Image (cartoon, rainbow, N blue to C red; front, side, top):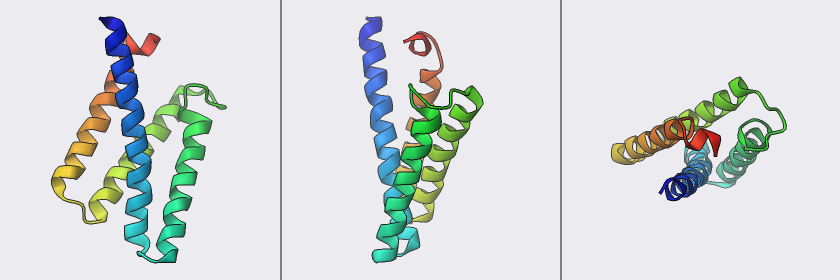
Length: 116
């Protein structure tokens, strides 16, 4: 039973992280302008997010500091939520994304997932 919970939570966390990257790219594209400038800004935002995640927040992070890990996670999810709202997305989508991100990431720091 616990194994199913752990793998389900891991899959949902991965999904919300991928959605966060898509939201960052799409929202930056919409806010920066929907032309080539927006495309370049959206790609740059995703690349920057992936680099930050890889350095500080991934399970095998190059820099293993808990403060940096949580700062990057909170910063990226907050930025994605704010940009989603700024890009004109409906409020329901913004609140759903924010709530799912918050609930899943809180569940990830609690046992038994924390020790997984």
